[in-house]
Image 1 (cartoon, rainbow, N blue to C red):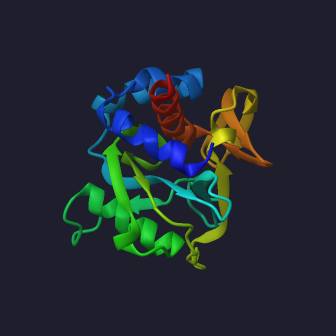
Image 2 (cartoon, rainbow, N blue to C red):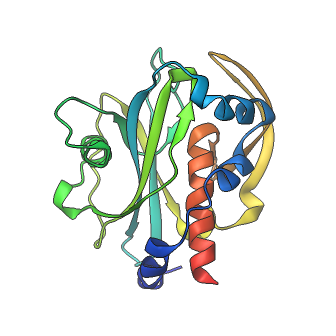
Image 3 (cartoon, rainbow, N blue to C red):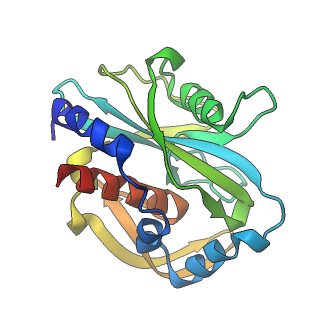
Length: 213
């Protein structure tokens, strides 16, 4: 899909009802669904904001940017996810958090990010974060400058790949906090995207598909 075609969908995407948990659960294992449903019983979670950021490449193809985090001693090390991070005291609100973290991790200017809408929040039990995702766009091909301390690699995914059902697979994942059996995941050009990121990405995918109808 070229970026101009994607831009034509934005007015519909803004006004659609969020599919919410119905979309998120498509990419969650049975054990994760139980944990997600237990969010109201969780200890007071910390807040994080993330950005599903779309942009045109040099060929005007619509893309979304993800990132591979560096190997460190955290529960999200070596995982592919959205740009984003925890809320800080100086952040005006959680949308400001998502923008600030996206700027820090990708190097794009804050003024170039246009936030389209908020998405359904998601509780992530391993790190005790309530994650608030947003959809945003860049109107021109960006020059990325990944944050070297935290970002190992940026993963640029064509929107057409995200919409392709054939890249949704299942396998077992073993992490620092346990094993996950028969987990749905996206396979993006050699990168496996699963867990909370896959759940949130599933909602983005469903919104775009509905807007195309």
